[in-house]
Length: 420
Image 1 (cartoon, rainbow, N blue to C red):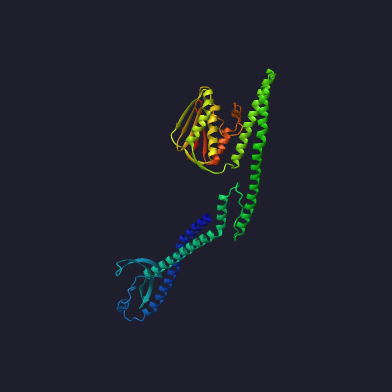
Image 2: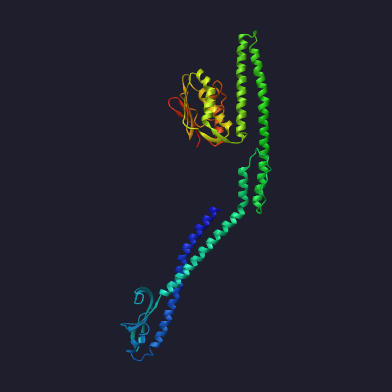
């Protein structure tokens, strides 16, 4: 409606400006036409009265009271009437003023005379300008009134819409509050609220089903996997186990471990995508990084990696503590897992960003699919399931952060989490 109003005002402004000129010249044309008719009428009256002056010497006395009348002898045949606009010096105003002048030839005592009749246009021009200004002022007041009325009515008519918008901004699927929209007088908004009520009710139902499935899967799938893994470990300790059977059992143990990790990762991803990590709190990344770093120290030493920490800020973030711990753990574990023997991991923290750099393959991650799920180059690494970066990306999206990947030759991989 604002864009429509702007378009209407632009159009109205053009019409007012153009209309002012057209209105002025139209009135001026009408006024000059009436003035010319008055001059022609006066010419007729003056020509009729001219014969009443008996002596040519008395013509000067007859013209003296009227400064706008002039009669003088002419040479040749009488001239046809001609009306022009001319500028003449006004002795009272001490400036040039516009006049409408009629010039015509007349006969007096059988001799040709030139008759000149003038009328000032000054007062009438002022009157004409006043009418035009009043007309423009009236149009401006009318437009301003229309804008005010439209804005006032728009606020009243659209108030239910903004109430619906405010309700949607604060609506949460995980809260069991009734879905209620205030009824209004506008039918279209009532229909919108009805459609939104049906949509949100269905989405809440789907959300609750998804949540229930996630919770059930978390319990029901982890238990059989844990039991299977335990049984396989017991079987691997059997003294009667042959070497060939031990190879098969080792493969089965690796599979069950991978299935357990994959199940945990998929459930975690589902919980993040469905916003099951509710609530936010002040999180100090400095503490989170040092805590996760302590857990990975032994793994890094076994791989012969060098850790470099440059924590130059607290890294304050207002978000979910659990999600930030998962994010840091995923990125650090990824840096260790995808490193090379004798490589390094560098961690930098500032108020603006959290950066992890690690040596690795001399090939960048596939452009456009760095955070894709189940990438072959990621799932083939020992201990990986191909979901670490996908989970990290989803956490950043959920927490309002930005995760960026860069490759720096010859073999440095950099992940940057922008905090501000």
